Length: 147
Image (tube, rainbow, N blue to C red; front, side, top):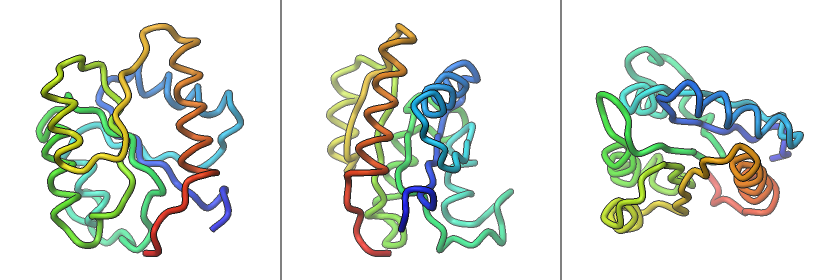
């Protein structure tokens, strides 16, 4: 799979953080498709082809999921739990990208099988750099398991 075929699923309910993440990716020449889900239900519907995404080809999976923890309807921990419980999504790389500084969130995220946990920097320059590094690593360097 070439880098241009690799898709990112951004699960983020804050419009400002969504715009910053997309801007940071684009500013760093990461032109991959970015699918945005604005809550946990929408993310799960997208990944499993249900609800508003019924009929979507679920064989087309994101290369990486950038998952916020503090989401409406279904929170990020529950999204992660459901992904890891289902054999179709259990190996998808999930990066927690959150403002939470709660140690319990960090422990729970890794216990549930996240691949990485990153606290969102408040500063735009630091945030841009963090997203650039995420994109470069997960889209260019990381080898994902076969689907």
